[in-house]
Length: 325
Image (cartoon, rainbow, N blue to C red; front, side, top):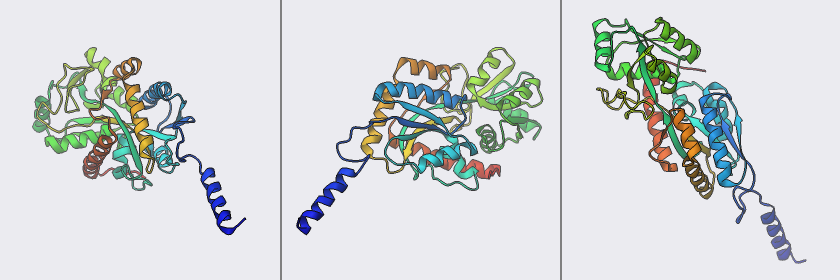
């Protein structure tokens, strides 16, 4: 064999041995790992499993949910950022790992924008400002007046320092000029218990948690913490429409893949997710959980949204003084 033929044979052998991203490979040809950076059993996990089942039907391959919890979602996000960019590892992320944590944590090993390839902005879960039934305020104007009359006399419960329910109050104070005092708890449950008992006056919590207590008259809804009203409780005005335009502390949900994932695979995943979201069982499940659909399901739309949210929450985190290791 001549030297030229030998080199050509080696080149052909190397080409044949190139896995995963070889030309002509059908994608997907094996199960997809769908990482949830939070423990099983929570709302994020439930949404991911609903999506995974519907996506499996669309692509003809299993979509396997893997819970990789820790550090507010950072551990799972870091693992996905470091995964092979072949479309077989994706993450169901939220406001924490995809926006807030970059400013909140002193050490973070990934960037919400540059470390990921966006797949789809799924939607958002509205928060709502609620007060104990004995608080003498029934709308935003009355609540602000109550605070102005006696500064630092009103306090709000959160699920912990740095949580969205904490930062929601920081943003509220910044925009409304109020002096609400923060009281952190170890989780939503303990915070809600003290709110119902009147130990604290208010809380910025998710609408699904608050809804039964509002309907029972045990809590009063001051306003939905999104720019638009919630489909779950359309009778409740938003905080934005009551005088704080731009106020939005909803928790968003988006799917991302490792940076460098081929564009054609991102496009195929995006299309499959859009089809999954249109399934009646998915729509019914998400509506029951209070999830609102995103206006823009394109990968580019998710990138723009993450950039805007990251910038917004950096200002709020800096104002709060909260920092986590």
